[in-house]
Length: 209
Image (cartoon, rainbow, N blue to C red):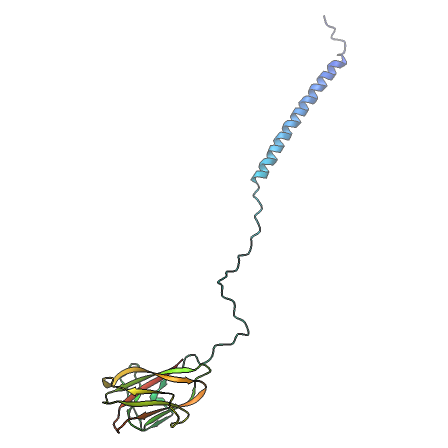
């Protein structure tokens, strides 16, 4: 029979304390494992820091921006249309209503020795090399129109041999090649034929590069 009144031996206390410490250590280890697992999960869920975006490379074909010191394009680049009836001087030539597109008037009854004069025509720094002339004619054997600068007697810089268009109001645009001309000039159109018959009507002319 055991005497329950006597106190337990020290070895019993040590055994119980050892087990208690083990249980506490096991509990702490479990908590630590849970905490480590939680931290690892949070680390895996964290999005990666985006790489710094590099500015797009400049396209090799991109046009360079214009230099502030670039010269403006020469002027005029397109000439105004010269209406024949608005010439500064009509020598031996009369105006009439026209059936050509756009309406208005043309000049007609042009014969040998007649002329038109246009003052202050600015060709600019880029040479004009041609002129379109809106013409109509029903004359046999034609005639000639000369283009001169600054004098009705100057050497022509271009000329047109007149041919029939099929009627005095049957219009056609003829192109005349010019010697290159720049700057400010008075332009003369002079007309020549072997007889005194009228041979040409003109509506307008337009110089070009």
